[in-house]
Length: 362
Image 1 (spheres, rainbow, N blue to C red):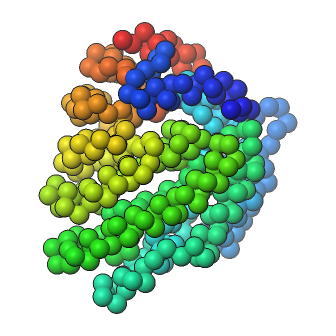
Image 2 (cartoon, rainbow, N blue to C red):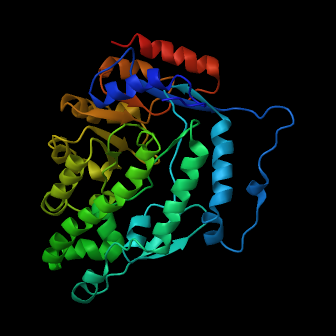
Image 3 (cartoon, rainbow, N blue to C red):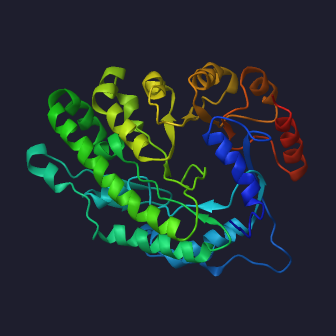
């Protein structure tokens, strides 16, 4: 595959494959980016200053967003194994909007409003609508990005947020938590239905991307030429290990079996109670742990990373900086490690020095 913004893609991709296979090529997978200054006389597109009547209009101005995306990608330096990737983002609950939720656009994010008030009355109405205006909008956005990307960068899948988070959007997180006690049968009926609908939506966008000759990527910018995605359940922070196992674990395992490559997004300290169950899913390839604001500490979470590695899973480590590399090298093996950024790298020289240190990690 040839990429104008990453001419050595084929060599770099070998490290992604090694990561997925819980191994290491010449060194672990390490991604870093830095801004690239515009050349003399170069100015950003006028669309950056475009005004809109409301946030929705701005989110749905795909012509402007594609133009800005191309500019931003062209003005980055891709160091280590970083790739020029982008995904058509319409917010984290867009899948739930296609299934009946109301949808609001804010300045920096979006949010849904529940559509299941009464299970008996509303559950059968909460179904994937392939004619939904926002479904068609995402198809348009994806196609425009693919056209702009050809031979230059990689277009990925949107943030679907299926599974338990999708049910929480349909119902409301607090009410869904109560439903696990008061309406467990409805929840258990909805999980497999929602999973099949997610697979339907996934395949439509996956087929477009693969038809364009691109690997699969998304909001975690790993890549694979098979079906790749990010199983998750942020709602699980509200429930016990027993409820997670009873209601949601099988659905997550089903997602992993459907995919060729998967990395589970473990969101915050309150989700750690579910890690042992997740590590038992044979088809799950990797774990991304996000400690959350105020909890960033490689030393604090090192036992968690050691557990993941001992279970035979790959992992993304986010809280790495130039000052704690020694701890990383001392406590973990390089096989199956993906470092998605290194704090303190502000220039190419420092990035190259960091990569030299990773190259001798054994």
